[in-house]
Amino acid sequence: MADVDNSIDSRDSNEPKIETDSEDEAEIDGPPRGSFLYKGKLLRPALSYDDLECDKQRDLFYKQLADSEGFDVEWDRFDYVFNVVNFDWKPCIDDNRSNEEDTRLESVKYVSANIVSVKGLLYFITFWATDVLSSDLKPKLYQAKVSRYCQEMTVLMVRLKPTQ
Image 1 (cartoon, rainbow, N blue to C red):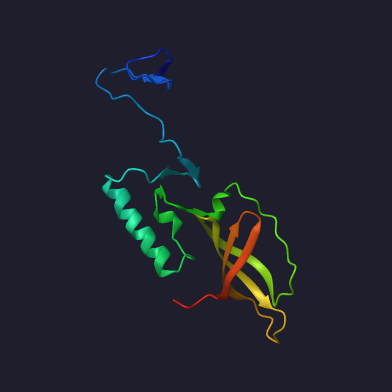
Image 2: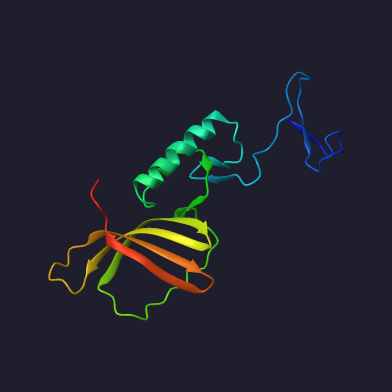
């Protein structure tokens, strides 16, 4: 078992140094700042631009984001957090909603959402809904792009999810 030495060393850091049994073993650092566990997987911030694996994942991430117009990302394939947030990570955002206008769609089930930090927030939401003004009440898969700046919410687009 490792002992923690809380004394100050030459690193000028307040982080504790972990002592090991062998002098040849390197000092063990904790996860990078901004890292977090999601479904048992450590996700790290994509801050290192000289990490080849990070660069490879960044390229694939942005390709998926562009190809799906912001809606679909295979989150489980990535070990890094880029500038888009998976709504399932439960980011700290205000989720108050209002419905002042009549709508034709009635939400049946949330599927996924991605959030991009821009001037405010941009949400890419995928959900199952029924068109209540249609004779066909079978749920269909929809996508919506919604922007939020200060307290103003604007629905930029709602559509049936395109087939791949």
